[in-house]
Length: 414
Image 1 (tube, rainbow, N blue to C red):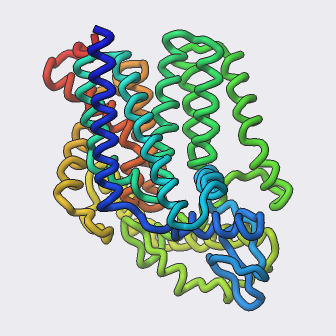
Image 2: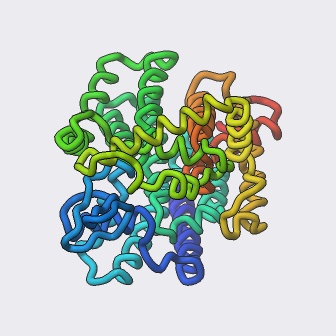
């Protein structure tokens, strides 16, 4: 039986590999642009992780030249930028770098599929877990995202690792599992700044209702602080405040301005609040002060028309759960994307509602699922946000399918 299992799961991984290689030739990014490209470029030539560049005349998100001043940045979570930077050290040019990053992401994606399988066999039989793992790895947006220069693949891997060791703590309660869980949590915090909120929530869930001993909670917090401290100390020395990421104001304004849609509106900020006209001193604290300026403006807009932004918030929630009915993203309405996403979204929602009734891993997943929806909807909703939630979506969908078929909670998970 173990031999058959070995063959089956590795057959799934082989199909995953083939699908991603094909996607690489048809859909792969050809360069590293946007925020990641600028961050890595500026780090490479100046040694400063920053996205705002001052050329002596104006300041903007830009690729720095040798004589430009790069402002230290906390605009983006740092882990993915350092991930690309480390790979860059072993490559000769941009073409090689993009190719190497995507190859590493493909490997990470295969590991994610295997971890997903390992999570499933905690609840269900081997054949069903193999089938679900195959569907997971061949899910169209899961294939497409791997060949893009995006932190999503890394986030999915870390989130699945986080869920896996969550279960291991419940099943075995060893300190090794606690340490590995905490490492995954720390990396997630450095990949998604807001994940710190969900980490604290997880620890509280461990305390009650799961009754994990308080000393283990303290150990986890201490280890997390140790792991994130180098970056936190770097930020404190520069900005004189304890912060890991600082884009709350910008994101709030992007998603809540007079021209904002579900996807937000970045051009409104560029036109109405041109950086050279904002009275902020250009120094190392520029990014922090600029973000505070954006936050004040966003709050003013929301206070002036609360009903308008409440309606927009509801639209964002609906878009996150189901579909964005007014998306401007290329190929968003492609049948290969929209149909699987809609099916997954509906089944995940019902699975989350059903799972709220029973204490344990699936209840935790439901709370995690709703927490992400309600938090992100404060800002704006992009297609990649749904991709980040794929692990939780799939597991909650399985919960619903089981309930629908058997009409008895989790009977299939035996």
